[in-house]
Image 1 (tube, helix red, strand yellow):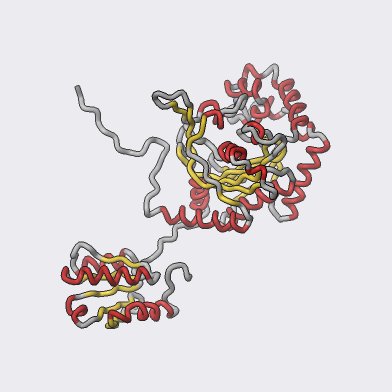
Image 2 (cartoon, rainbow, N blue to C red):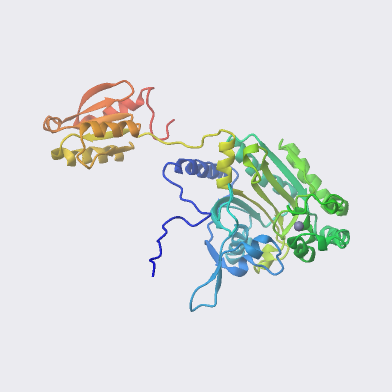
Length: 439
Ligand SMILES: [Zn+2]
């Protein structure tokens, strides 16, 4: 029997983020923490997998729930678990489980950062494990709260330097408006639905609004002539939407009303939005973040009735692609403050002591452990863009000193062992140098 060839590569649709790219992620994560701090949103971390019914709820007809979830049951167990495909459900589950609804200062303003898993056909900007930054504001319903969450995301992408951003917004109205609209859509599509795609036929029964979202049938005449949601809004829903738009105007956030926008999940009500990049390089995967208001989710998990939420999620891989498309470099590789050259095997312990002493004084330092040649070690100084090279030789140690070379000015000074830190402090206090976060 032929030996099966072992494959040690990441599974299709997943990726390693290597040290050479990690500074982009750190930059994003740092900005996320800054923004959520300013907006007074708190982080919540929920498990990577949950009981399947956290995501698969009753009559939810979304594609995600129908065919994109990684669901598994372990041997000797009847418990069905699912790798989280999105963040909202787990956060709502936790909100109820830990009775966060009892907090006197509702709404709870929460955010999360982390991986999600969906079994989709991979393409640029669409991975099977992807990272999301998302916010959920649960426990209050007010148009200006919708505005605040959009403002958070919008100012975040603006702060990254993204220019080609467009806010698309729509309303799905309240339950009554949506029920009336659903009936109108069913009436409109009833003779044509048999000529439409399988997904649409399923949506016709489960959630006809989502027919408008169809990429397959979008050019059909019957789609163009479909009734408009806005003609079915009751007065209350219309007033709510108008207040959201007025709030966006007040904050100077440009938007476009897109009546076709219905969003992929079934639990949305009132405001839905997508922030897209109009940069050509983004292709079909242009949505940078998207979300909306939802009702019923808290109740589903056993929490109080009529507790509304609003949230959005931002794909971080896609955000990085959007930045690259606009020529924004997120990478931020930090140079070393010093590289300690060990010029003899006999002084390797002293070299390590000096390295450690500098580190405990806040300097970013590394040294050689392999007894490499002076030349080889100096190449490392270059590659790591070290600002100083500290030369430690046998004779130096006998004389209780080392040589500190300032790479920028190419000047060398002999410094007593006891004075290394103060010599470095002096060097880094001058205009040509700054170190660890002082820039
Ligand atoms: Zn269709």
